[in-house]
Image (cartoon, rainbow, N blue to C red; front, side):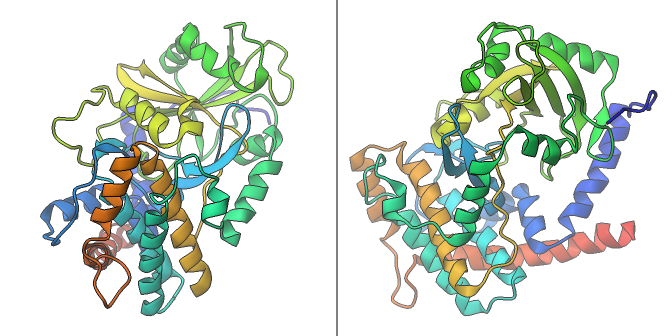
Amino acid sequence: MPKPSKQKVPEFESRQEILTARRNAKMARSTHAYVRGNTSKFYDWLEQAEIRGLPQGPAIWICGDCHTGNLGPVADANKRIEIQIRDLDQTVIGNPVHDLIRLGLSLATTARGSALPGVTTINMIEALFEGYALAFDFDTDSDADDICRKPEVVRVVMREAVRRSWKHLALERLDDTQPTIPYGSRFWPVNKDERAEIEALFQKETLAKLATSLRGRPDTGKVTVLDAAYWVKGCSSLGRLRYAVLLDVDGGVVEGDDLCLIDIKEGVKAAAPRYPGTNMPRDNAERVVEGARNLSPHLGERMRSATLQGRPVILRELLPQDLKLEIEHIGPTEAMEVARYLAFVVGQAHARQMDRATRKSWLAELKRTKPKSIDAPLWLWSSIVELVGSHEVGYLEHCRRYALAAA
């Protein structure tokens, strides 16, 4: 796809204005979109709320932004695929309860968007707790499929992930299979200084090996930047540094293993609260990479931290097998299966960081305040109910302020 010979490069300040408007528009699409794009409101509420008996879990790495869109198939360097957490921007060493509550909020707003009755939301929260607790009843190296059955929506996306190739990735991400990045609404041209800094990044051996070490590529330590563009992507990431970089690994530019698409994303301060006194990297990019290595090993081994334009950035290769788990409309039975399974995945990510004794004591603490009226702790139910209400109000106010103004 030929590029235009001349196209104005948006200055950083003008980019921010456009990106903020797009972010506000995306968040106005639905309550679930608002929840996904507004992590800060979740933690603002959590700080102000007085939920009785909210347990203080072990100090482990947590996702910090654990909604359904941040879970999905993730491939390791050898194309082995598992459902894992796929976005770790908010990761910190904190209270694992925060991940469970945020996932419950995401599932509850999905249920409301699917016009499911309130009793289904109650059943989903019970299934959510059951799936999470299940991860601590078994050894972390047990076969997950033998413990918690994948729901059909998950099996479908797994089958799709297995069959995907570089061509699928290029057509999906770039709209083209040629070794260029097409400019348009998703990709903006970079200026000369940005291009020079990006090229300098991949002259460093540690970052060049990010591309050469995967899938049996020749480890020459040399890669060539074929193209680079500013990436208008995501919701919570809009407004940060974000680049797509197309690399040639061995100079042949042959379809597949020779081409490499790198995502560069700015690491910013996490909204998720960390446990005081814990030892975490102060650099926000290093924090994200370390969190990924603990929570999502498949993803963590494919990430590196660096500095670009004086800011911390995370680099990772995008693989065709990496997919987002989109759950927008589900039925009552599937809703419970999805809640149970996704909570089990999050529980596994937490459990692998604990020894057997810690897992046992954490499970006992989780079950300590289960009432007779619902098969889930009262603190979990109360948290999700209050959060759904506060986010509904926030969403409508957001629509009034931004969607109507845009119209």
